[in-house]
Structures are given as C-alpha cells and as structure tokens.
Length: 455
View 1 (spheres, rainbow, N blue to C red):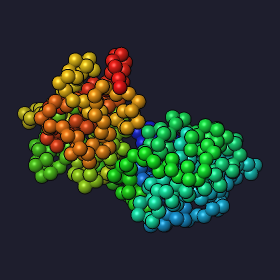
View 2 (tube, rainbow, N blue to C red):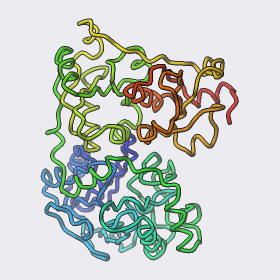
View 3 (tube, helix red, strand yellow):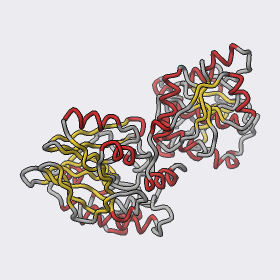
View 4 (cartoon, rainbow, N blue to C red):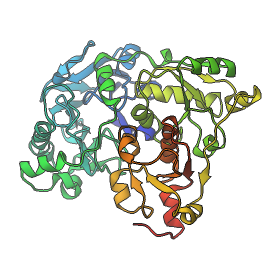
C-alpha cells in the first residue's frame, strides 16, 4: 500500500492519495490538482475514486476537475446531495483500490454528511482512518456549519458525540488518525500542530474525547464559537455543484491608467505585499492582506465575494499566485493586476498613501497619548496584551466598528501577534475614515521579546 499526505500550509489543509496494485484514490483534494496526477503517474496508478469526506466550507475542492481529467468516480456521503455525477455511500460501504479496501463510516456532527474512511490493508487489518473534519489531532470539528439544513449547533454536537464514541473510539488504539486539517484551520477550536496521530493517543490526550456526559460535551462544543468566516456557505455550495477548472480562473495585467479607471468604476485594490512595503506606499483605499500568511482564508473572511478585485503584488509571479490562492477559497473575481506593481503607479505620478510603522519601544513611550487596538483572537488577547489595549478580533472588526467608541480622528495604534493582521485591520479602518493610524511592527511578539509589561 502506498499512502501519502499532501499538506497545504496556507489553508492548514491535508489531502491524501492511497494506492495499491496500480489503482489509487484521492481524498479531499485541493483545487489545484496537478500534484495528484503527477503522483499517480509516478506510481503507474489509475485514479479510480475522488472521495470527499464532506462538503468542505473552508476551501474549494478540485474533485470535479480531477475526476474529469483522470476518469475517476466522485464519492460523497449520501447526505451530501451533491449536484454532479457521483457515488453516494452509506455506513459500511466499501471501495476497492487494488488489494486494499476503503470502508465508509458515517460520522455526522461537523456536517450532516460527514464520512470517515477506514483504510483496510491487504491482510484485512484496519490501519488508518481518514477522519475529515470529524476528529482532528487534539480537537474535533465545530458543530455549527450545517447552514440551512435544519440542524441547530446543539443537535449537530449531539450527533458528533455519537460519531466519536459510537464509531471512531471503537477502533483499535493502533489505528492511525489522518484528518483534513491542522493548526490554524477555522474548522476547529484548538487543533494541534501535529498532522497525524493514533486513536489511542487521541483517546488519552484530546480534550474533547475525555469521559463526559453528552450534555457536557454539547455545552462545551457550542460555547465560545468564533463566527464562521463569511465565505464558508459559498464554498460549501460550490463544492456541492463542483467548481470549474482552475485554469479557467485568470487575471490580466492592467496598466496604471486602466487601474485608475477601474477604481473610479468601483473596483477594490487588494495589496498582497508585506506590511512594511504596504506601509511605505500603496494605492489609497487598498486592502492589505499579505500573501505570506493565511492569505486565502483572510481574503475570504474580509472581502465581499462580489467585489471586483485588482491585485497589487511585488511581481507578476506573485500576482498570479495571489489570484490562484483566491480561487482556492472560491473568490474568482480578480479582474486583473497592476502590471509593474507600485513602481508603475509611481512612474505615471499617481498619488500614494502611506501607513506609518511604529516600533514597540516607540509605542511604549506613546501609550499616554495613543489608543491601542488589539485585533488578535479573544484567547490570544486574554493570554497577555499591551496595557490598556482594546480587543476587537480582525474577523469581526467591520461588524463592531460602532461599538469601538473611538473618535475617528484620535491616534490609534493597531497591534496583532506580528504585524500581519494589524496591517490588514489598519487598511480596513482607513476605508472607514479612521484618519490617524499606525501599525505596530512585530506586534505583541516583539513587545514581549522586548521585556515590556503585559496585562
């Protein structure tokens, strides 16, 4: 048996290829699919199945394109009601891949249609379980993504309790656990950095699998849930229908004057450079979401799907990557990119805005006359923050502007963990007429490293 995990750091997404005797199956593929085709070719294997553990909400799957290019059959759990040709499986159904078997375990709770897949080897021994978003390493899937399908989060959490205790925890301790996400995914609360484990290790160390009543589990799983990113429902429905081929999603180079005309017509600039470059000079009104971080997730969270986007990047290759990574989360609305980058904008003498960058030692000296806004998550803020800082997480910042009770002309220093989210937040606030903003370089990490006091 050949088994390989493909891990996409920017979306904390794990996908898999399982092969035996010239046949293969791909599980939970990302939208750009060449790596699976290349791996199958290297193995001399034919991809027979493209399997989805559930309707993913945090990324767009490449199942439709991969099936079209490989001749494979798409497989969903029966409750997915997918709208493209597929095999709908129920509990206990099996797929043969060479001399191994993949056995479906219906494990609803994260979503109604969730299916985990038990990998049974050539000797008939269950070796691995692909748990999708039902069981993570150190965590379990959030229960509030059923959308308009008639389930409350508490009902889904109750189903999740049954799936964990009635299905997954009945497996032998030696069975390996391979989930669809790692640390940083919004599909769980506190997922580990580890990318695999065993049932025995999770039984011992996963907080959500410790002995407790159903009621206690449901209470725990439905409390303190962060809001789901707004692109999640869009991606789940796109995955139900099947996305078009990634090569069909392209952006064209635009000269500076054409960008100027598009902006006058309502387009939005998405600047994907790092915070320092953005701060030194950018097109007024641009949103800064740096390509180096969890760019696609933040873009899906902060940008309206209907926005017509123009990308500003360091070079053409970075612009192309930015457009591709937007498509991974279903944002296919980039109409072009600024050809030549900010240098081209400067060359025709068009105006630039700046965002001052403030060192943590400078912030310490200015605390008496500047308000500090911390845009990290609630738990990060609670673990230690700059004295007097107000906390509004980036993902809800625009929704809670009125509650800030801050004069929009008042000096405001924006801080996060390292300067990435704070630069995005400052760019959003500029669009809401906050006039006197600075971005704190290095963020709270730099503040702590400098030995400065936290609350």
